[in-house]
Image (tube, rainbow, N blue to C red; front, side):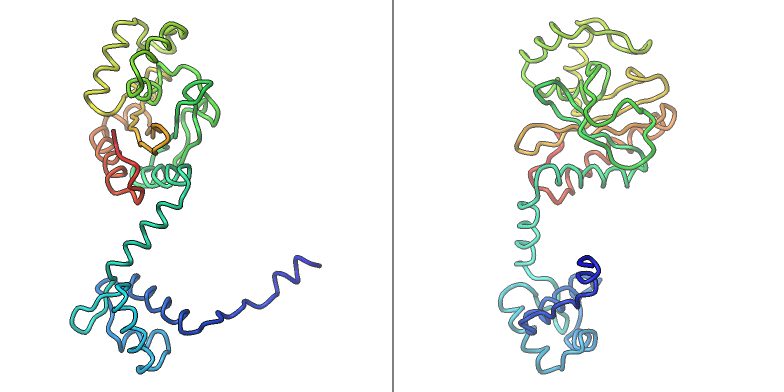
Length: 258
């Protein structure tokens, strides 16, 4: 069968062995804790010492590696490579990576939401067991009761808020849902000042959310932490700090916490 033949086909060896060896050396240095000596690199790659020194000299002269005494470290050009990887990723990949990083850190579900022409729409989620099962991809209801909805409204133009309020009744989903227009507008003002939004059991009883925004260059995207109310209240400060951390330490320079 064709599939079996393709599976059994031997892996083609690199055509330029010196380049492959140089990349292997860079990989070893990048993975090391405090850099490596030439002897260590030679031993781990199996390349003789003479060839190792020649390759390391070239990598150092070009800025890919740097030398500190007898040890070789990553050089300044390595940062250029990393930035290029980041630039070439699509906005969806960038946001997904940030969502997964946040979910892994807090061990809760993270929902990704953005504003589309039909409304404020869920794009997907990362991590955890989703306790708010309505928040599936494509869901766009009750934006006034969701942390992500309030956040994206607060970050948008004021006329957009008025248009939303004129066309979307503030219907109660729980006893905590904000249903008075003036109070809702004050809530949006507080979100603008605070920088993130809270759903205090406004969408579902027993479930709270916190949403922070990432700017992708194509508009804001909300990352919403979804957790049981008791756990949320106990971890609220941690959640806020992790939202900020993901934005500040993200490998995507275009993403910043609003």
